[in-house]
Length: 484
Figure 1 (cartoon, rainbow, N blue to C red):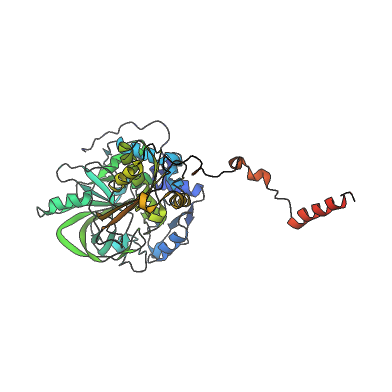
Figure 2: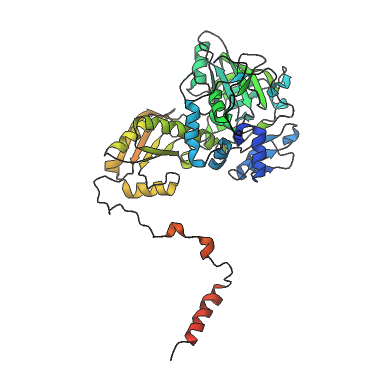
């Protein structure tokens, strides 16, 4: 996508709360969801320890971590409700809004006086210039975990945005785990010619751009354009000072560099989203050419395996999977990637079943929708797929292994799943739907009439005092008035 120099008019109405990182911190603080920590917390384990204790309850802001002048923030998007607020929609509308943005991207526009380039460092020392934390006990060192890695298709010039773990290996080098996605495809193409690939790593992007980075879209779909659609206005970008990559102009920090051809260095271990360590191995290498940032920037870190890590990847995947399934299966009503399956491996699908065998076809479609999906459970409309106990109940009472189990062996899965053989393993599907031929009363769920209408605030007597006085005293009084 070629840059334009003037923006398309923004949509009517206020921008979503998540359109600006600093505005989002204001929003969290107004709603008592931002904990400002005492200055001086240790970058090594200290930040992660506190962020994990507050995970899902509040974001954490760390002034002067290990004496560094740049503060660190974590936990920006660690609840589904917060994500809905960031997008400016109700929780039930999140997937539809994300899919709408994916299908209707807004081209970005280029500006030439960007806040993210107010300060430029061409002499680079990553650990001195940035407060990069070490999170888990056996991590190999400091890691950039919330950096948006932006690359360009060497043939078309269209950008790709994704998040990769980035190990600080030396003052100007990062070790990068590149999984088989678009960035790796771009790099392999230029490496075959002996060339490096230009990259930028954006730290401190707004919440909506973070979400957009995780969209599952075909190659040559720039996620910054999806971010613009989520914002309701085209995203302003700036060209890097040392290469051709365009980055969000309002970001906090940008690291500019190159993925080096024919270079591999040891990287890892690192605590990953399955809550195990990604192993140590030879990985790709980024050489850093410059660091730019705002005056008084904020450094965002995502603690590996925490709710922010899981949900940031899970919500966009749900939206993409829902759209993927609905294209072939009109019966699909909703999908959910469960936290117990690290928001990647366990997919629950709710369908309006019309034909026998339909659920198994949905299972096959879901397993083919993304290689991370390992177990798929399909349930009926009366099962709340956002409640794991409900899904487990459906499996317990509606599933029989000889009839309802789908097994696929020797298939591609997640390389970060330690139970696989370098990403090759087995997948399962559970048809936990009611047989259409079953008598209506056989699978009728029990319910108490009027239960959902009970107003507990009206029926509970908070002034009752001691139960013995209230109940036994009334019983004694009644017995005194009984006729002899």
